[in-house]
Length: 197
Image (cartoon, rainbow, N blue to C red; front, side):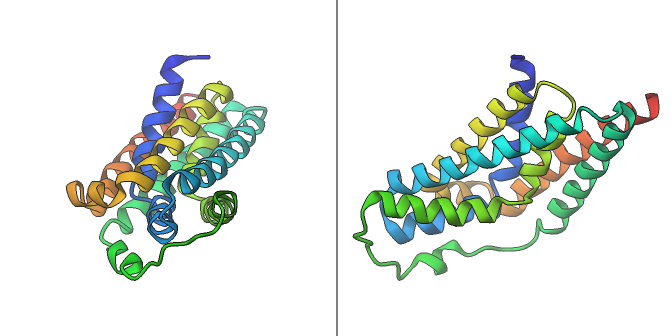
């Protein structure tokens, strides 16, 4: 394991996921069910499984020729940067979605299963999954998985416990712009690696 790779994966995925639909879904589900631990367990489990899939896919990519992988990584990060930048001005009003939420009395495991299904499907093909696969394709898939999974679990915790507070402190469009900048920088690094061969 490489601590630098873990830190890079954590930072990249954390910043990209913080304003993402998965965190917002976790906020809404937490408000809906009002059982934070059950929601967190479901979300964290789904996100961890998604990062396993992404890291494995990235590892398989690493078996391809290096120049081809660098080009694919550059394109994926560039596309991610554009998507994040273009969606930076969209507003999400979580308060309206949760204002009339009723207390749910279902067992915690049913709530966790519901949250797992919603979050797993919401995260499929998401930018953070693509970013994790891209980072893992450059080697050290286990370190990338550890960093990415830790970031996703942390973001799920933030979404469950303090999501609305985070969005009040740092507006969603600012978080998306920061993530877009990171993705653009990673795209440039991968493009340079492709050119250098």
